[in-house]
Length: 337
Ligand code: SF4
Image (cartoon, rainbow, N blue to C red; front, top):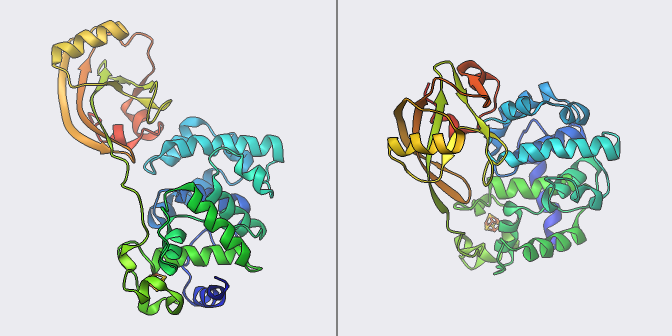
């Protein structure tokens, strides 16, 4: 495996992507970029990254950010659990490590939202620690290089390659990890492999055997759970009720009322009266649509319901909903305005 180090680093020096979170950046900036890049593409992250750093430029500021401001900054990036963990992690770093990302791998991996890959990426780039950062890109490259049939979705496979890579990792671990990531992202891609320009092609078994797109091996993806929701915006004509979602995906975030089935107008009126004691005098259909999460597909029928009295439930004006509250896209695209 050692034979890949020099060709890979030579290629990286000439071809590395110019990304705002590379070069002379702080451990905090690396941390923010790595969390944003979990499950989100580089181009989508770029505008969020700068906007976020303008509002919270260190762990102390992030730890004290209001939830509403945090969710507003995160709005559109999806996977809101990352935003929640971001703040929890910052609070722990402030309380336990005086506002500095810990240098020890065991400490890092125990922080909220930090897994094996993220810890490796941050510690290698921020502190030059010889720790591998093994993600899907990296596993794809190695499974092709060595025609490896191991299931890349399994943790055991990630650990296997983490240990292997750490035996060959050079004195520039951050650069080496970035080089592997760039190779996976720009040359050895999932559906296209640019083997003719790949610095590792002379070592690659998949290329030699003409089996490139047969690798990596993965188990069947988990079936998405299909859910039906009536999404209900209750208004008095001025404000709209939003309540923290009680469970499941997007738990704890502000949401319109969600009822776990499609209902007729009169059933909506009954349900709202029974559960919230609110009298609805008119129901308007807004629209029907879908929202796809990684493991769930929501089929949604959205309604605007009018009531003279919103009681004491949390309610917000249109302006507050659009500009202050970080409403997840799953709800935002069904807003009645
Ligand atoms: S030669 Fe092709 S398949 Fe092999 S690592 Fe390079 S790009 Fe991937």
